[in-house]
Image 1 (cartoon, rainbow, N blue to C red):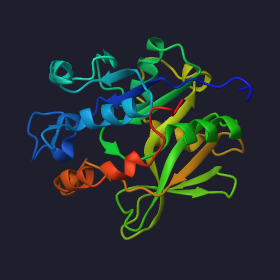
Image 2 (image 1 turned 90 degrees about the vertical axis):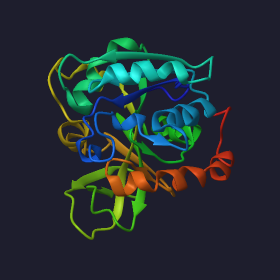
Image 3 (image 1 turned 60 degrees about the vertical axis):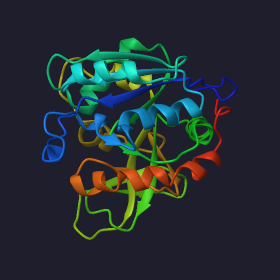
Image 4 (image 1 turned 45 degrees about the vertical axis):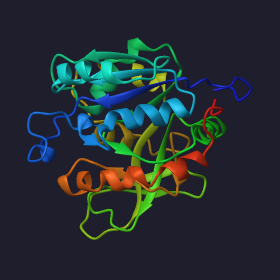
Length: 253
């Protein structure tokens, strides 16, 4: 991508099609992105975060219980944030779901987020990291002392992701925080309507130089995919307001 042509990231794609099987014991029959946190669906907190950084259009990639998510959207009160959605006919995974909504945006660099995790980050800094590194894909990474739930990244001093390591109990290190900037050409080359995991099938193929970069941020980070972490989501988000106010916000683009 030419560095003298800034990429506008005024819209984002949120991946919200997962089954949320590990949360079924505490959220029976409900998609995890609608998990109530501080009196609102978790998804709405992500909307707030993106809106505060200049995003004005969101495309939701939906699957499991999409009707519930679509119905809930009428309660979101930011009137100048446009929210569109596309529902997959059968489960496609994070990669297949992302390919499925590609036609909903004309952007060349796509801002993509998982709808079940949250980390403070500066979109302005992330966009600059992606452009300056000329990466095909960039991701946000964070160091966790207890990273046993997640695979680890080996990151070079240049920011290049060299390899992915499998989950290991008691491990610590840098993980993928579930926020991406992905070049359109990479997604357009994927087969349509084929189940694919972004994390397992696509990203691990991008370890050649110049392909995949990781911008490391200090966190904190939460993934509400298991009951223990969902239980701490309220205190986590309540403690973030002052931190996010210190990040670049409305001028992120």
